[in-house]
Length: 635
Image (cartoon, rainbow, N blue to C red; front, side, top):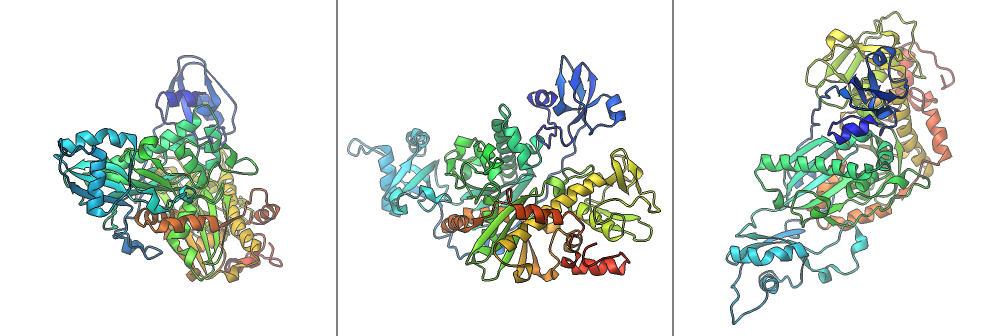
């Protein structure tokens, strides 16, 4: 396929559906040469006449010249926290007195004919005498540098030690901590004990975020983020699992994730004037599929019934094994998952939110490509996941985009004229609509009567903004002269249906989870919204389309990126690691993929806001005020 040829040539083509021909995003123009291409509804007659094809559905038959439209990329923004006290660790943690990584300066007597102790034992004896460290281990690559480093530094060195303790994978704890001993992961010339660095990493389906952390003070020194380069191979996890089964797809996806991480690490090192080798530990959070791809573990059976991952508590690996450009002997540990679709990012969220030790019944919702939900308190935890798809992150929508400069993120529509007013990130001409803008647009179109409860556009309205476009009925949000690319920005009925399916999956997910444990929404004391997208969510608009339950707004609490905060907590607090593993094992996982009750509830959610309008009294009241007819709670 042309998409495979382009990849081999180093050309970044977007194939959000994993090359299945479902999304229509990998359009290129054939300038010269012969190709064979399949017919697709994603191309208009005009585009086909111009030589435009889908790269993933086109076979190259000889020398070919293609034109690829450049794609603007803006790095996602990450809020920078400052100290552990600001982030508020969920449990009391004395990380300063019980660090996982210790850097100890040693001054040793050199060997002589009278004292011919070998170099490693000499180092171990110095640590025993100075710090009471009795057992010391080292991998072969470290043993190879000891002799030269000791002599070049005139026997004055800083030993970098990984101290024994509970791991995020407690399957490894076959021996008590005091029997495992410290591990030598670095030997530096001179006194380099003044700082100690680690990184927390969130590998999201869409975005990768890194915190650079001072392990002595607990301060987050800097953050960096970028879009996960795997997006070019699929916008959602199912597309990536399918892609991983093609040829070298798995290794390619792993390389893309590691490449993104290494680029962010280089960016952090440059800004903070440090050597990457000074970073001595990494904690990674991500959903189950992302962690499988990061470690190079085939994820195929995550999507095939009975939906079983290879592992949920991955063992620690070294940076050198994965090609991560920090200290090659540093440990990389992944937050433990619960099941195929509830990963370590949700374990991290439960930890950072404090849900696992709260007395109040709480509902935690992480809204993204995959909607994960946790219900419970300190006594019990139940969880499930539903595939919302990429619509809330701009995927599967004709003019959808991620929340970056040029994205429309809020829309208001006049109920008499049907004319929109919108806000654009960066105060620049719009290029598309991001997730929060899509929710806002759909809510406004529903409340003003532009779309009906089934998501159908009302074509009899007296406005030129409702029309038949190349892809069917659509509503024009911005006319071409207003936009950055001089094309109308529209929301089509197909886009609306994708959004309704996405919101319906999430609402059905937490509804079924509540029913599973015999509770209802009135029993829930607080609703915790996690995920980077969640912090930009307009609760009123989300309720109006039936994404969130119609409860008092003061029940909602925005937590931001709980995945990276949980990884940060586990990185800083050695004592937290046993808690993390226990929390993951405590969660009861409800698989929705084969749950008939979920499908029934999901079907009921495929309306605005829901088949049962009585579940949304504030929306029902608003519709009555605007004169829309309701019959017996169902309309």
